Image (cartoon, rainbow over all chains, first blue to last red; front, side):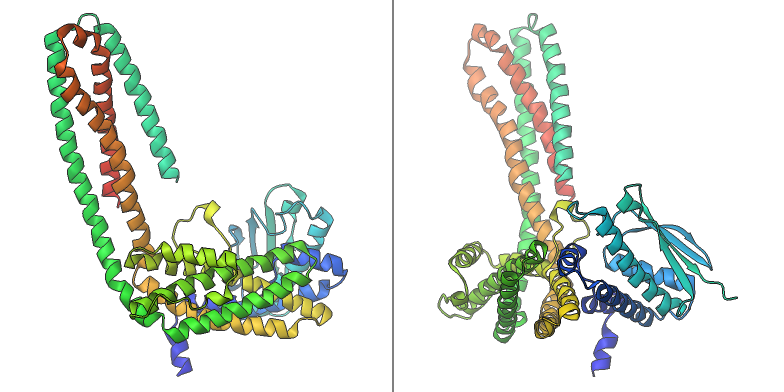
Length: 168
Length: 333
């Protein structure tokens, strides 16, 4: 009976429920907490990893995305970003590479936090999130992700690049 | 809002343009105009004003018709909502969850020293209280609908300020269909507005989103100092229960197209009032002057009042502009 009820829900309803269950803490709140505690950075990265891994797995299941390739990763990330309210601007999508830029980011807002702290938290969040996506969609250690922190540096849009690691 | 700004700009430009054109014509013709010509102007403008008023009345009737249609559609649906969608058990259950959340987050806000964290918890308290009041209002109306006396159920859980809000919202419901304003307010506070177009200034975080954020914060704190395990699991369960209960209401509300009908009502009401009266003033004033005052004047005085005729004619042109805007708005309801 429960399964029947779940089947009646549309994909977007199921994704909405998925996002209700898994979310990362708001950075404007968590940065001062961790800064005051002087610890908890590893825990934050682990929590971000778990959250994005759960979201990616859930989305793959709901939409029936089977491929372990860059296009699937892009599709999954597109959905996570859209439901999370983040706008991404595409740059490139190929078999081995997916890159996009963002005009705004939670870390970019708020002048009360220094650039060094923003930079540190940018690394923590992006490391946890990208690793979760790569591990869940492409497979463990099958890809890399780089980000240029342009928003934090104040030099335009931030560019994020996912690349497949060539097995030798 | 941007439409209103654009309309105002358009009106201002048109008014300035018409004003300048009229002043130029008046300056070139003022000294040579005869009394017979003036009578012709008077007759023509009076006929124009009469026609315009006729059109205005037709427009008003059209808008009123649209408004009445929406009112009857919503009024027809409201008893079913109060009787079935909002059962006493459901309201009691939701209110219990809201009270639990308010208590938990009041304690959390009191114990944290981090301003941003406290702000998050205080936002939750404010929104929880707001929804609590809305449900109390609905419960009050529901019981009245079932023939019970004007009750004050749930008011004991309110502080004086919240009670004032409750009274204000309850007294604000003068028509049956207005309960939908309260229901939509609950849904918007819980899950954020689902309208296609929302102005950036109106975008507020929903209670549901704030609760999710707080759970994530509590989870991290729990991992760091093992402090809030029970609180997080309680809030998570309450969020899940509330989500289930409010989602059912939201689903029904959307199925009945209430979020679309309410803005249409608001727009129809605005058009019916603001634009009509504005147009009426611009048309009725010169009409009164031309019909009642000017015909009583002697030839010399009439010549003296020639600028008045110019002004009334200008006003009639402005009346036409407002009328066009009025019809444009009507067609977009």
